[in-house]
Figure 1 (cartoon, each protein chain N blue to C red):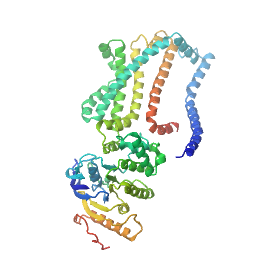
Figure 2 (figure 1 turned 180 degrees about the vertical axis):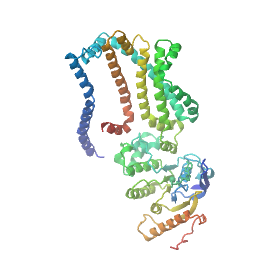
Figure 3 (figure 1 turned 60 degrees about the vertical axis):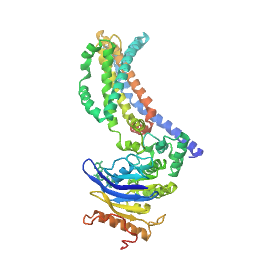
Figure 4 (figure 1 turned 90 degrees about the vertical axis):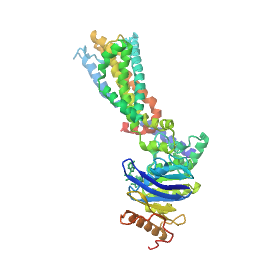
Length: 261
Length: 280
Ligand SMILES: Nc1ncnc2c1ncn2[C@@H]1O[C@H](COP(=O)(O)OP(=O)(O)OP(=O)(O)O)[C@@H](O)[C@H]1O
Ligand SMILES: [Mg+2]
């Protein structure tokens, strides 16, 4: 269980990027975080990753306080961030250095074939397309089998077609070991396709505005009416989150509440 | 990839590589057209009696002189002396430059302390040190090696510091996310990231080393290629001067090339890019 308690972050320059963020995220849950630019999504994710410190509040994973990068938490950035001097296989194996070589090689090979890039193992990162590179980054993050995987707009640099492909792929991979996924996105469609729960944030200071549960069975039909309805609901919440006259109404909406559409 | 596919690509690849090599060779040869052409013209001009070629000896005379120097073993003695000086100065300069560059690149504190002083020293024309070095180290090898080391130091120092400062923060973060310890971060992220610019700074350091060895030897030496230059001037033997210059050019190019090829396997990951750029 990942517990965020009153997590706040004020940058040294005085920007109040995150204010009193509280949430409990169950193992294996997929959470999408969505919100206007600058509302603290990346700040939240980096704090969970242990790359930055929260100024107040606490983040705990199964009771472990997170203050530095944690072995059970992996992260995928917006850019693949592959190490250009390592070939694809060595990039994927980057986090497995403690393992004996045969073990490592076997797990790397399995991960690469899982993302459909078995034939690219000996290739340099610069020889990959953007989508392939991001798939390598996904394999690299998944191969140490994290319990929590953080993704900061992982597909936003890709074209719509590749993005869809990778969303489906991510779900497939998720089904293997069912890690908790926390996914920052700007794409409402992506949030509704992937998430069990959607956190809508609002800016200045960044905080949780609304939580929207997504009770749709997988695989989800993007064309279904319910899907459309959920998308509209998220969009409305986004609109309201940016409207400063709407007061915060933190907390979870009750199922069925707001069926006004 | 199946075995069949693999051998297929191999057979397709081989003639392509051969063609590419042939093309590269042709491109390299183009560079020789101008110097060889000019040399041949001058040779003809001297033979035709248009000039006596005393002050500007034609290629044949230069090669005869070189050959004479080589035959008597003189060329070897002088080359050895010069190479030994450059090698000693290069090793010292690179060691100090790497050390200080790493220190100032890695720690803001030492950069604030050291860099202003080192930058101030850098702005001194290095030849200005010579009198002081002679007082300190005497007129023999030590002062020459010190001058060369100073010449090598600055490009290496600057190169290493810049390289460390400009390492992509995002890639360092990958190392942090995978919980690398300090030394592991240096070994697995920082070193490979700075290597390309390090090689470049070694090469420019070596270039300056060759420049400063000439200065040092011109200022007084009893052997060395620089001594051949001075000797040729004092005895009025321009062919010997040009022969020594040719020797400098050849050795300078060879040593630079040695650095380049020994670094090549380490830089294979960016190699193709450089090769394409150079071919274009
Ligand atoms: N390193 C930093 N130093 C100072 N302020 C920062 C820093 N990083 C982010 N901020 C500020 O904190 C706020 C939240 O930034 P954050 O990057 O978390 O937003 P975001 O929700 O990820 O936005 P986007 O959707 O554009 O990526 C912004 O106002 C930003 O200017
Ligand atoms: Mg962001």
